[in-house]
Image (cartoon, rainbow, N blue to C red; front, side, top):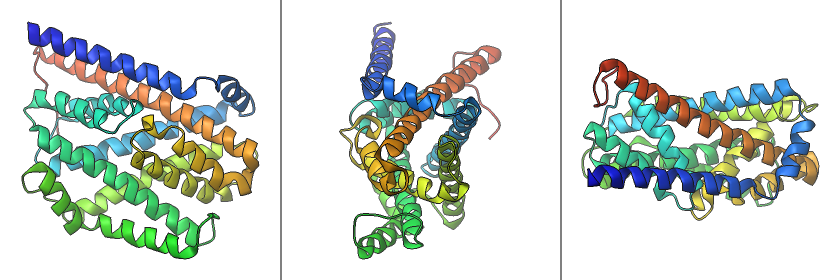
Length: 305
């Protein structure tokens, strides 16, 4: 009973901290957010929100695949609930909270903590590497201007591609997991396809949040967002990359949109992703709980894999 109360208190504290830091991330800028929303059509906002949800869902399947190669094949609903609820921890400064919450929740399915930690770190690695690679391609083909020499972009691209090689992922993952992480070429192609779908969904969402902008801007928007997102992951002290992500995003898109336009788009993207994170966490958690109730057991239900 004491352990149950202790875990319940920890979960409540976790959710309270998430809410506080998520609110803090937008505190003082609500007027700017309101002005940006008024300048965007309701249909555009709704479409962007749906696309962000789809992009997040793709990343959820990335995490499930990484859990599988790390030796933990979770049921679909319970696995996605674990992922999305745990992901709320990124709104607390530091990158360990998401992974820690996911490890605690996955433990209900007898998953070793090291396997969850390995999958979580590889998940962050895929985000950074694919984000840098995608943005580098956009820069190299002339779709986005950056304030550093072309040689730096080439180096970033080469490094990110190297980090995505199956042999590199296997060695890094196995070292953390304490067991063999079986990532082969097939797994890599699936993971890259899912990440491409996520970045594409986010890019289209940004166009919808920019009324009057041509669709040709999608590459620049997507490249800027992917690189800014990757920088936010690397700067672990910023909750969900807040501040660092928006600053780089604005710098990259100022030549195209101007400072006010780039700032407004950065704020709208932040709001859309924050709302989508909360929606996915609540929806999948409710779905997992409903499955357990239907099965008539307090233990996680097994779902078709």
